[in-house]
Length: 507
Image (cartoon, rainbow, N blue to C red; front, side, top):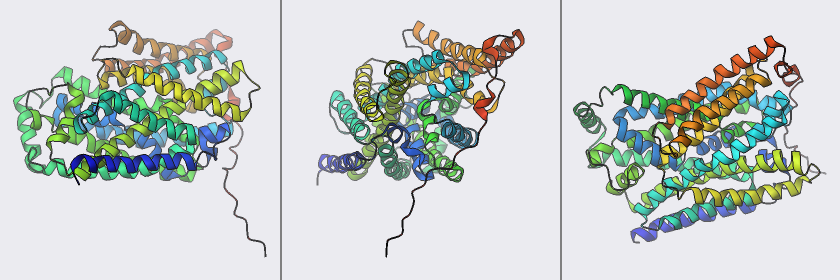
C-alpha cells in the first residue's frame, strides 16, 4: 500500500468514528442542559481528557512548539512543564471543585451567567457575551491555520481544502451531539494523542537529524552556546516567561476551559480528574515542546520557507516517519484541533443563545428550540472562523491576542469570585474593563501584528487583579451601591449529583 493511500485510510477511519459518535449522541441532547453541560454527570476520565484535548490543539503542536523551539531552544520545554503544573495541576486544584459547586448549586451553564449572579449586573453578562463570542473567533482561526500548514506539507493538499475538512468534522460532532458527544469523542482522541506523541518523541529523537537523546541534547546545547541562547538574553528570557505564564495561567480565564468543570459528577471525580489531566498535559505538552526544541538541528540558522508555522511540519517530513505513523500524526493533530474547535464553538454559541437570545430577546423560548438555535449558531461560528483564518497573522500571535484579551478580562473577577466575598460589582467592572483594554489596545494599535502579545496578555491578567482589588475597596469605602457584597452567592448546600438509577428486573 503506497504512502498516500495509507495516510488517507487512517484519516477515513477517524472520520467514520467522529460521524458515529455524533449520530449515536444526537438523540441524547434534546434539552439545553444536556447539550451544554451533559446533565452534569461526566466522570473523571471524560472531563480530564476533554480538558486536555481542548487545551492542546494544532496551535500548540505546530505554532507554539515550533516557534518556541526556534526562539528558545531547549528552554522551550519549560513551557510544556508550566502547562502541566500550572495550566493543569494547579488549575484543577484551585478552580475545579469550587466551580463545580457554584455552577451546580446556582444552575449556571456559562461564565456570563456566573458574573450576572455574582455581581447582579445584566450589563456585565452582555459585555462578557460579546467578549467571548468575538474574541474566541481568532483562537478558533488559529487552530485552522495550525492544521493547514501540516496538511499542506504532509499531504500536499490545498490549504482551503484542509480548512473545510476540519470545519466539517467539528460541525458534525457539535451539531449532532453537543456536549456529551464532544466528551466521548475527546475521550478516544485523548488516547490517540497520547499514543501519537509518544511515538513521535521516540522516532524524532532516534532519527538521523537528532541522533539519539544524549547526542541530540548535547548538540543543541552546543548550538545554544554558540548562538547566545545559553543563557538567554534579557529580552528572550522575558518573552519565554511571558509565554509560560500566558499559556499556563491564561487557561484559568478561558470560558471553554472553565466549562469543563461544570459537568463533573462529584468531588471524587474532581480529584481523579486532577491526576489524569496533569499526566496528560505533561506527556502531550512536554512532549510537543521537546520535539520543537530540536528545530535548529533540522534547519540550522535558516528559517524554513513559510516561517515558524512550517517548522514542525517540515521536521516531521524530514524525520522519515513510517507511512502509518504519518497518518496517525495527522489524525493526532486533527483530533486535537477538532476537540479544541468543538469546545470553543460550543462555549461561544451557547453563551449567545442562553445569555443574549433566551435571557433578553426571547425569554419564553422552549428549551428544545434553544438547543436548535445553538446548533445553528455553531455553524455560523465555524464559517466565521474559517474566514478569519485567511488573515495573514502567524498562529502564535493570533492565539495570544485571543487568550490575552479574554483572560485579561475574566480571570481576575472569576477567580476572586470563587474565593473572596469582598469583591463587588465596581471592582469586577474595573478589573474586567481594565484587563480588556490593556490587552486589546496594543494589539489593535499594531494592526494585530505585534509579536509581544504574550507580554501584554500577562500584564493584562496581573493588572486586572490589582484593579479588582482596588476598585472593590474604593466602592465599599465610598458607600456606593456597586460596592455592596452578595453573600447569597456563597450560601446554600450543593445538591446531590445526578446518578443513573439501576432498576431490578421484575420477577
